Image 1 (tube, helix red, strand yellow):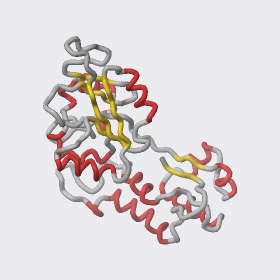
Image 2 (cartoon, helix red, strand yellow; image 1 turned 90 degrees about the vertical axis):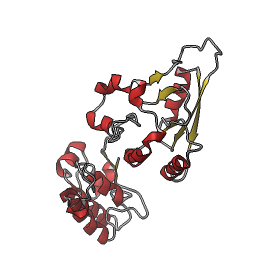
Image 3 (spheres, rainbow, N blue to C red; image 1 turned 180 degrees about the vertical axis):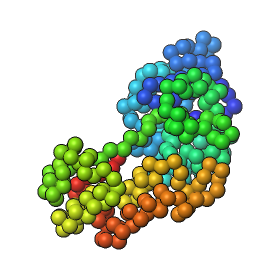
Image 4 (cartoon, rainbow, N blue to C red; image 1 turned 135 degrees about the horizontal axis):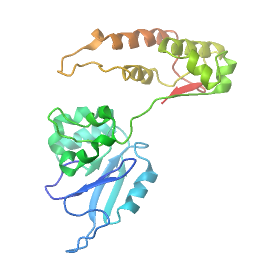
Length: 260
């Protein structure tokens, strides 16, 4: 939640369960002095927050006038520009795993620890919780999900390509990235370059990196780059596939599988 005004706001945090930590007015509790609604603005991008969840939040907290704005285009760039201008920020904003890029702007956010977030910290995965905590110990982002990854695939296309089609068989045979890459090449060859395993090889690369504890920088800020065994392994696994006519990349036609 962005610190835009030095007044006392009620904080709405949209998560699987709705947590509210306020300064003076709690949802469901009327302000006897003026009975006015608390006006809050939310920025999010398409599918980052379920629209049905936003509707439920409005029903759950009738004393809050929530204006939810679905921002198109480059969401992160617009948010950073607005923060730099120190004008026009929303009260609440959806963030992704690039939240650490906003740590230098922590003064533009409320510290959620001051709003009682620490009371429920033990209900969340430690690594996910820490993603929203700056090096200085300020919590600027509250966890909404853990982004689990799975392989969704077309059983009929897998079978036609000579690959296993039953979930147990797929899990047993395609159980590492080399096997995944080989399956992509087999699918491409079988269907003459009209069917691909995934629509974006860059996404697969980032998923490989997410399996490790380090990417391009160490906790002390020093650069790792290609000295990282995981970065090198990820590149060496996917780059040959991309050179073979983008065997994992969809340029046209259906997909046999996708990562999410």
